[in-house]
Length: 316
Image (tube, rainbow, N blue to C red):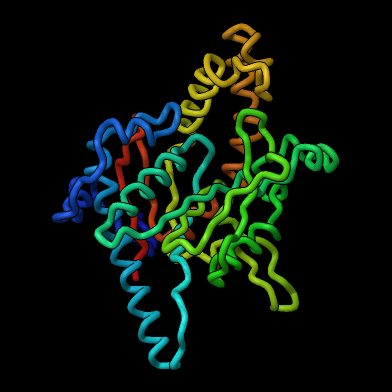
């Protein structure tokens, strides 16, 4: 039987050596020690990974930012407008344990060292989770991280204020130690040039507003979006490995929400980790996170060693 034609892809796909060449003369401004400081637990990204992957990405983002500034100037001249350009917003999505935080921190550090020295801020969606008390009230503690566990209206309000160029916009703070939003604690974002908005749910869609008067998707505020990708089995290994390592570190603290897991045997802890992955995080990945991958402008695919082994860039 003749093979069915391959479905056209909206992406250009690159081998790593090919992608690495796009860095051109972009200087490597991070040291090995700085990279170690920026990477998350159980995410062994090295300086060579920054050189191979992130310098080209930094150069690509610089071109997008410059193009947006150019368009803003042209529009201002055309409409005879005055005012400051609003922040360039980058969304970073992907599964739990995929390495989003490391990617966000490395990109932030690289971009702040561009020749123009832009002001770059980083916010995660964790702070916009509903407090545990509210999640318990709604029976959602086992759905934490699912779309319904976030204060979506608060997220949209925050991003709308950022894009409107408002000063001193507050974002709530989340503590991974106590596994909850910190009451009356905020971080203030004051007109950055670039804002990185990172979280598992940032590319997810929602019901369309029937009146047509509100912004339906968080990603409508993004100027560029990135999805961190890996195979299910690999992410599972990363999640379980991270859980077991946390038993030896953060979970040891009495104030940790997960302190009880540091008191059980290794075998029991492994069973708990697998249950949490299978019952909660894998379901969320399949139902809510992975389906948003095709909405990203750039997909970074990782292998089992956490190194990016493929790049896909959406066609213009």
